[in-house]
Image (cartoon, rainbow, N blue to C red):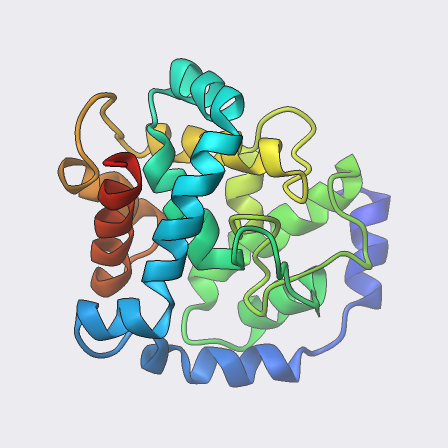
Amino acid sequence: VGSKGLAALARATYATKTIGVDRAIHKAFSGSVENFMKRRGASTIISKGRSLKKSNAALFGKIERTYGVSPGVLLAIWGMETGFGSYLGKQNTVSAILTLAYDCRRPEFFYPHAVAALKLVDSGALSASSVGAAHGEIGHTQFLPGNVLTYGVGNKNLRDKATALASTANFLRGHGWRAGASAQANMGAIAGWNSASVYQQAIARMATAIDGD
């Protein structure tokens, strides 16, 4: 970690809101997949996803040719994570991820992402004042910092729609996504994105519905 990253570390503060969200995270993924989808507005995600697939056909076509990932799963994740970019979060990213590495259920999971966040500050992809989701996720599809380093494409600016979607496709390909196979057949790759079973099933169902239009 270089001087900019270390300066961001020195400015970081304990993110009380992040810990509150983390302690209640199990509630967000409880119940049946049907109830989960209803709570998360799956019907709206599918409807808007179909519309965005058509209006961004060139972008999704380029991504599929490059990474072999169909539009549906990318749109399902995008809609689920940020309402298609309508809300990217307001929590300071560096403070959130450092807090989770320090005081969390899974510090060993978040520590590498904390180091990655500081490296992203060094590279200019993040700043000490960058904001995102409560768990330190970044951009349109809510990447954890370590995944930005590994799978982010181009300038790694995941607040840019095209960069975020291409990076998400790169992540899924890196986790075993098989081109031409259905979302259900690619559950292993979706599981790499989120470990909650109801989330995985919801994404697969929405992806199938979006691609089926």
